[in-house]
Amino acid sequence: MDLIEVITTRRSIRAFEKAVPPRKLIEECLAAATWAPSATNRQPWEFVVLTGAALDELNEINRENFALRMNAQAAFGDPPEPLRSRQQAIMDTLLRVAAEDGIVPGEVFERSLRFFDAPVAVYFVTYKSDDEQYLLSIAAAIDNFLLAAHARGLGTCWLAVTIICREDVKRHLKIGDDKELVAGVALGYPKAGCRLNSFERNREPVANITRWLGF
Image 1 (cartoon, one colour):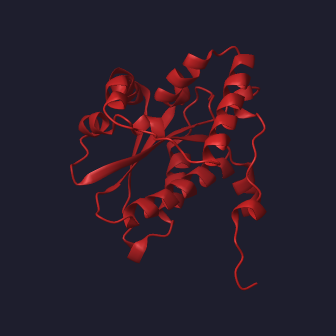
Image 2 (cartoon, helix red, strand yellow):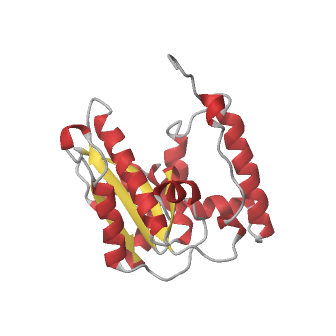
């Protein structure tokens, strides 16, 4: 695949095979992440990769603490239009195809708390900062990782829900107070024949979201 094809065919995977990808393959994807642009080449990122019992422990921490943490914060907020309409459309589609696979709505959400039962989870960590440079840099690194994984036949799902319990996770993983847990990504081989991995999705046409000045 060329780069544009990798970008346009990448998708969020929500059903995984049990097989754990080789460590070398994961390392290649992480190496791609480190080639993302960062302000003055500071490379403000660290990665924590979990599988097996270590991942099971983390999933349990998220499950046990999620309700309490959600009640203590406005975790997701209320998006403005037209973002709200796009969000509602994808959620309606997601729940419909999940039902076709025999998965009830509550189970879809429960699975998201445990990285959709992926065999591997990757946490992305950066340093705390008063400006947004580190967050912008690690977001670019995450995108590199997602694209590299797709190009190598792996599936990923970037899950904001897996960091709602960020302080509990940081304590468990012994991540210092000077650092911030930014994202959790599910990783593994996509499960074949699953509607959760193959439903049609779209993107807003560029003409609808672009202003051209001086052209």
